[in-house]
Length: 229
Image (cartoon, rainbow, N blue to C red; front, side):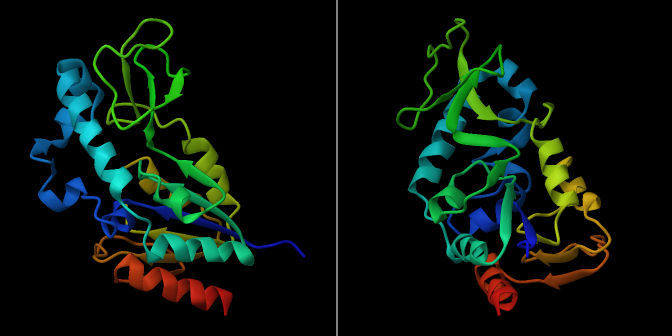
């Protein structure tokens, strides 16, 4: 008998409980910056030094963070289910907790890539990319992050996983940032959906959904216990 497929879509809310700030909690500001200044391709072209400094700071903060009870609880599901994590987060807290199959929709803070060839991706040694660090083609290295205004390469793989899910768990996301927010639409009619967020917007309408309007560190362990019970 095959293991049931669980797909978990995680957003900033699960990492926030490990001390990683979200821009939506600060009226669209990140460390005092408008999000489009530091998280868009236009921002990079306009002021690459500012963007580089911003992500170097985020990388330091993320490396100092620890996986929380929600991250660890999701790993427990692998004892009885086939589990895939699709995360909008660029930290490595799911990896730190021990999840086996993780797709990073928006890139990874621990990687750099060429600013002229997306195929050239490199691990970051230490916690900084410096201006003057170049790829093998001679272009400046940038964070391997999907910014506003850029395509999301992993979205098709993620959509295919959601379409095959028996259970979809959505944790800590406002379901407002596309294309990630549209992934729920790929769930089949038989898929059971759970939504966990501290503040669930009234306009969030999902079929066949059970909502937990609680912190991820509270609700995820509770749901995992229910699913393993």
